Image (cartoon, rainbow, N blue to C red):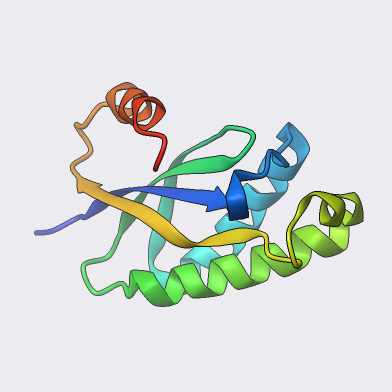
Length: 124
């Protein structure tokens, strides 16, 4: 039996510091709305001003790249629509960076260790 766990890090384009608690909560709601279509289960959500950390479980057959495409497109469009002030901080209307960091692991991996590793490595 397989139950893949992932630590996903999504970064705002050019690391613009636009994520507030309210925006983070809305991003999480969008994630939770889309996740059932891709057999994904959100385990934990954390944010900083320029990126989000997502701990999630997936089905072994989940196409994560398709999910990320759908999530990044929908969340970008909805966030810019619902928080129009954010557009002033973005460059050319881009919300998310094209890249992302996806780490695999088990449920026993420590979230704290992952967060510390990310803080040390600015590229995550």
